[in-house]
Image 1 (cartoon, helix red, strand yellow):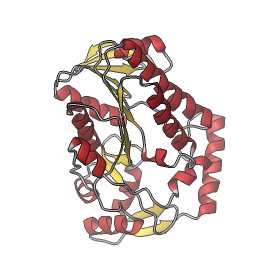
Image 2 (cartoon, rainbow, N blue to C red):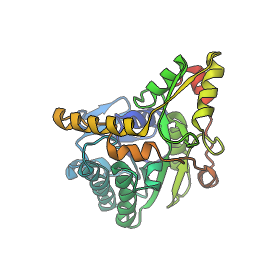
Image 3 (cartoon, rainbow, N blue to C red):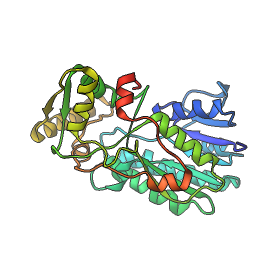
Length: 303
């Protein structure tokens, strides 16, 4: 693979796994970091943030491809998501376009962008996709919309899986709600397929672990029960309690200055009845197939 690749979010959950994949493959890699600078671990680090236009120019200088993993998943106000996910993405695509060499740009978005009305986060991801596409010029922009991504290093799904294997499943929303999952190693393989494709498709793709129609809460409980050899008790979280917890969490976050995960805006996303999706489009375009399903991940503790 002859591409020089610029990567954002390289120290985060998904980005760190992707960086490991690319450096092992010998891909010349330059990554953005708030702390690091210089050459380390097979990566040329550029110190800066998505707000630093000079740092972004250095990041993409001479890069054939840009992979944008950085973003905000937590926040106490919509403006925070707008500044990081929308404005930051726009600065990056403009830097790539002005650099004159970039041929392809991969935006790691989220399946949440399919329903932008549900949360501040979902709206920001949708807007980032739209604005990046408008500003790309001759650069081919590919958007990946992965479902809930899990794996080693993840802090959001791990507690759920740990409680599952202890015999407890706490569920929001409707009984028949559908959700999809994706292991981070499979997502990294999809990015590799994108880099290796002769021509980057200017398209948007949804990605999951290939389970038809995704999972419902009962099927997740059944998978864990089979692995444990004992039943899993499902506890339904009432909507008033969930909304109350979200409001309290938001208040505490504003007093403490820490970004909250659960907010009133996030409740709509968590309780949406259908997060299932299909891999057919990305399979046809890139030849990518996921390998890790939830049963294997839970059994082998790949999370």
